[in-house]
Amino acid sequence: MIQKILIANRGEIAVRIVRACGEMGITSAAIFTDADRHALQVRKADEAYNIGPDSVAGYLNAHRIVNLAVATGCDALHPGYGFLSENPQLAEICARRNIRFIGPNAEVIRRMGDKLEARRSMQAAGVPVVPGSVRNLSGLDEALALAEDFGYPVMLKATSGGGGRGIRRCNDAQALRRNYDRVLSEATKAFGSADVFLEKCVDNPRHIEMQILADSHGNTVHLFERDCSIQRRHQKLIEIAPSPQLNDEQRALLGDYAVRAARAVNYENAGTVEFLLAEDGQFYFMEMNTRLQVEHTVTETITGIDIVREQIRIASGEPLSYRQDQISRRGYAMEFRINAEDPKNDFLPSFGRITRYFAPGGPGVRTDAAIYTGYQIPPYYDSMCAKLTVWALDWEQVLNRAARALEDMGVYGVKTTIPYYLEILKTEDFRSGKFNTSFVEEHPELVDYATSRPTREMAAVIAAAVAAHLGN
Image (cartoon, rainbow, N blue to C red; front, side, top):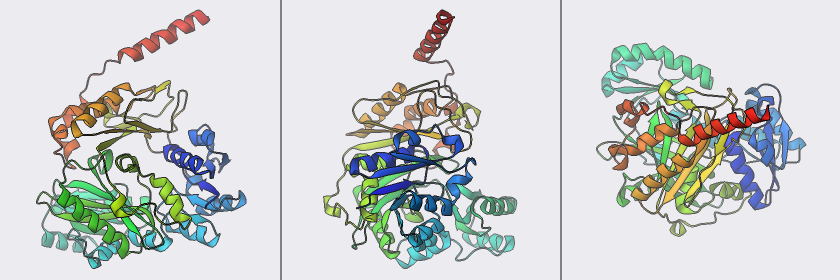
């Protein structure tokens, strides 16, 4: 079994991995930049190492991170998500330095990171894909010709893209001409490659993904699906497991597709196969994420399976702890990404000091956070500062519990998406379980919630003022 893990990440996912290490008797080693010296992973890990003054570059220097793992006696590295988690170079360097990479091998990461190669692999495995170009576009003229063949609207996508970046919808030829250079620029800046391809746009789809686990002994299982349809600009906001929009026949078909996809590329460790569900009921493969997902918490909640623990066991050479027929689901789970953003101001990031923080509790409530009272949210990273996951036996109960937990949660000093989520929970479209990826755009009125400060926050402000006055 692995003895010591370097966690090549930050924030709540680093804390999540630290906790898994603690339960497994594994020593955890965190990394941090100067901007993150007060981060929670620094406080929670057994060891913590400064990787330099540059706020972002330190987390993106694969050679330096692996050298640190070797120098500090680590025998494994967990990349978390984001940063270098889907960078094949990191996995290659780990292999050369005899450090176990807790994820798939570099070749699989590279193949699935190339969207066209991923599409070809899925087609060969009999997994349906959205109609699209079979190679990278040679230029705007080819894009226009293909779009005429497919019929508008189309999606222009970065071949090496991910995370909702390098992707534009084009409703007509004029939009395609306008967006072509933009996507090339976005792809080059974000992924270091100007390669792009074209897909037929699936209108008003549901975004459904399947969690899989695969070991080195030939065992591959799925842990059921997650519904990620509530998203803004291709960035997920709320994730649900299982999807309230699937029946058992669809769920079984999707599970078969996901396992088939993983086996087709000799996948090993945890991964996610993402699909679009069209209005006519057809599933289409979208991409495969070769890492742990932000939303893994809802899958853990409905199955009782610790996915990070399984990742570590797989990387240690152990077989999966469960066969497919031993994996069951119970109830519904819902995860809310608590972002430090102002929904009333076009979701502008709201970085600053957390003056007070209260985590919600009670039955079926889980909080994964990187914040605490007095913590200064740095402006250099993603705006997500916590994740709230709730569980209940049925759909109606999970909706009510989610509202109660969001009301209980207190994050003061910065704007957050909490009040926006409370508005989503009130809508009939969401409560009925009938929504798609256009939900946010179709409900612009949800940002018009009341701006009055909650009573308990006002009470805290008054109490602080009184204390300051008495102190003088």
